Amino acid sequence: MSDMNNHVRPIDVPARESKSPYDAEYNEHKREEIKRKVQGTAMKRRDRMSGNEAVALAIKQVNPDVMPAFPITPSTELPQIVSTYISNGEIDTEFIPVESEHSSMSAAIGASAAGARALTATSSAGLAFMWEELYIAASDRLPLVLCLVNRTLTGPLNINCDHSDSMGARDSGWLQVYAETNEEAYDNFIMAYRVTEHPDVMLPMMVCYDGFITSHAVMNIETLDTPSVRDFVGEYHPDNFLLNKEMPMAVGPYANSPYYMETKFSQRAGMKNAKKVILEVCEEYEKISGRKYGLIEEYRMEDAKYAIVIMGSAAGQTKDAVDKLREYGIHVGMIKVRVFRPFPGEELAEALKKCKAVAVLDRAESFSGMGGPLGSELKAAMYDAGIKIPVVNYFYGLGGRDYTVTEARDVFKDIREIVKRGAEPEQFKYVGLRDADADERPEVFEFKGPDQMDIRLSGDGVKVENV
Image 1 (tube, rainbow, N blue to C red):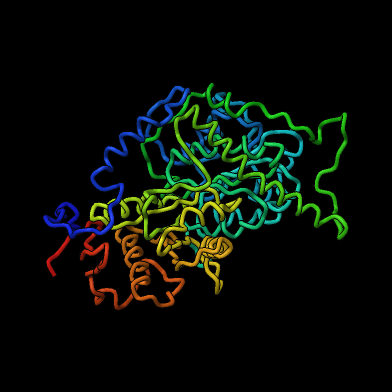
Image 2: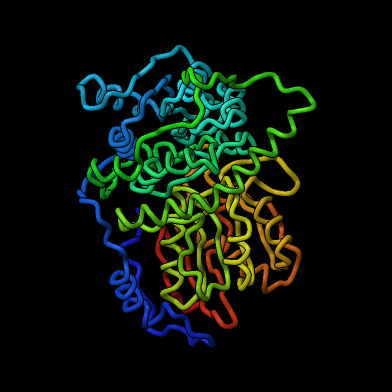
C-alpha cells in the first residue's frame, strides 16, 4: 500500500546558497499573476468532461461543413458524439461514414478542395493508413484539421498512448499542436482553423492529445459560450476552390522534376509563417477565454538550473515533481512543447540557455543514434544557438507505460549527477523500464552543493531521512 499520506516536510531544510523567486514569495507571486490574468470576454461554464467529449463540443461549437471518419480506438468517441449532434439537429455538419481511414482523409481532402471547412479524426494505425493522403493534403495547401488521439503504432499490438503515430508523420508538412489537458485540447481545436486558414499558412493541422490519458479521463474544464466561439473562428471564404466556376483550377496535378521542389519550398514558407500566426491567434484567443498559450509553456524556469522538456499529458506529472523539489529549494523547471510543427527551436534554446543541464523526454522511438524526434531536434537547436550544456535524451511512456512523479524526480536527479561528475552523459535511457535488478538499487538520492539535501523517494512523495 502506498504511504503517500504519511510523507512529511523536514523540520530542518538545508541552507541554500542562491535564493529562488519561488521560495517564501512564491504564493504572493502567484496571487499577483492571477490579478494580472486576462479574464476574457466570453461567457464561461464549468463542466466535467473527457477529452473526447471536450473536443467533440468544440467541433459542435465551430460547426464545420464536412466530417468523414472511420472509427478506431481511442478516437472512436469523436465521430460517435459528433454524429449524435448531427442526428439531433444540433449542428448541420455533413457526416460521411467511410470504409477506412484512407478514405476518410481522401474525403476530407476532397471536401476541403471544394471549399468546405473539413475535419476528420483517427489514431495509430488509422493515421498510418492515411500516410499517402497526409502528404497530398499538405502539398495541396488545404487547411483541414485532423483530431489525432495519440496511440502507439502496432508492433506488437498495443492500444495505449505514445507519440509514435504523430511523430511518424512529423515530416509530412502538417502543423502539429499537443495538449496537456482536456481543456487545452478543447482550446486547441477552436484555434486550429484560425491558423490553418490564414492566407500566410494554408497548411493542415493535427490537433493531438494523449489516448485514454486525455481522451477518456474526465477533468474539470471551463468551456466558452457558442456565439463567442463562432465569432472567434468566423466563416470560411476560400480564395480558390474547385467549385468556383469563375476560376477553374486543378488540385494535386502531376508535378515532375521542374516543379516539385517549388511546392516543397512553398510549404516551408507556410510552415515558417505559422509561428507568427499561431502566436497572434493565441493572443486573440486569450482575450475571449482568459487562457494564455504560446509555442511553448515555461514552468518555473526563471532561475532553473535543471530542466525537463516534454510534450503532452506527462507535463502534469513533471510539474508536480518540480513543485515538490522546489519546496526543498532545488532549482528545477519544465518546458512543455505545445507546438511541435513548426518546431520552436529558437524559443527553446533561449528558454534553456541559463540551465546547467537539460533532460528531453520522448514518447516515441526513432531508433536513431542521435536521439528521439524531440531530442534530436532540440539538440540541433541548442547547437545552432551555440549553447553547450548537457542535453540528455530519455524515452518514457512507450505503449502506455506509466510515467510517475517519482520518475520525473529520478530524471532531475540523473541530470544533476551528470553535471556533478562532469562526464559525457549516457544517452537514450528508458524511464520506468522493467529491470531485474530494480529492487537492488539504492533509494537515497544525494543532492550536494548549492542544492544540498538528501531525499528518499517513496511512492509519489518525498521524505527527508537522516542517513
